Length: 382
Image (cartoon, rainbow, N blue to C red; front, side, top):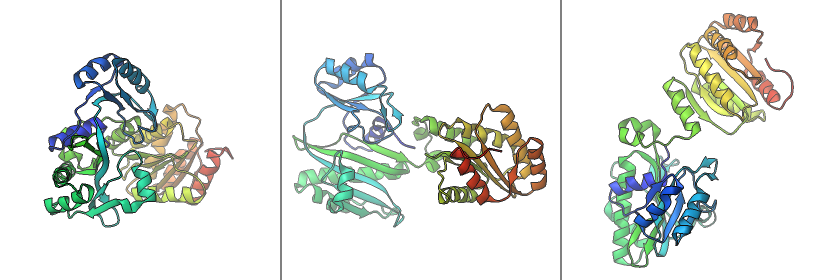
């Protein structure tokens, strides 16, 4: 679960990390009052679950109330990486002497948490990582021990030679680890962590991603979820016993079993197509799941064709067939689709589909190839 900046700052504050104290608003009418409470000048910052806000025009400095209104009106409603801005943070502008980067995530190679730090923080940290990776410090963390104070001091002194500043930064690093570990996060990032002209150290931005699989341990954090339309679909699907993740392709996939779902996506990619989703209807025989799964696929405007790939085991082919026929009776769609059906009660499933005028193949590769052709406007659907 991704958090917006104001939410991540609230969590950092709980763990004693010094953060800039702004006010979140969702209407232009509240902009001036918020700026008066914070104190001019302020920074008007788009609140979305995406990076690149500054380069997209979603972060603006305002020195007057007129500029606050102008920037708020411009930013509210704008789209940043497919995310519509519904909130802005009115944050105090600060006098910056230096910008730094610190973050904790999981190193997939070592399967351990890793602390990353750099004296080259700011909007171009991705460029720094790509072009001058030697400027980034990577420090593995033993999860059972955590980030120990002496380790944090060693890293901090590489960023801040002055003792007082290094000690303040080290304290922030330890607290960032405690926040990361205590919330079961997969990412906790401050970019930039700034040195102010008065010598103090402050987090003026914050980014966090929480592990969805651990949210049952943190009901208070689950309540912070601001779901995107795609996430709302994923959450509803999960409540119905389906596993659904939207992708960027054009071939909707409905499959039973996570392994077969991955194999189906691989076959589609191998044959030159692009899967639009991961959708596993699970191992139970429930026609209602098929009905809802079809509704999910049809609701995606990127989907040009659907590939239903069922290998019946616990899942019975006749139940899937009944669910599919029921779904087509309910849905007003002209999307072409291909059905691959084999396994438990295969013959009965094929009979049900045939009675509805639907042909089912038994070969996965053939089915994927036909779905790709249909997505390209070649041939006829089922």
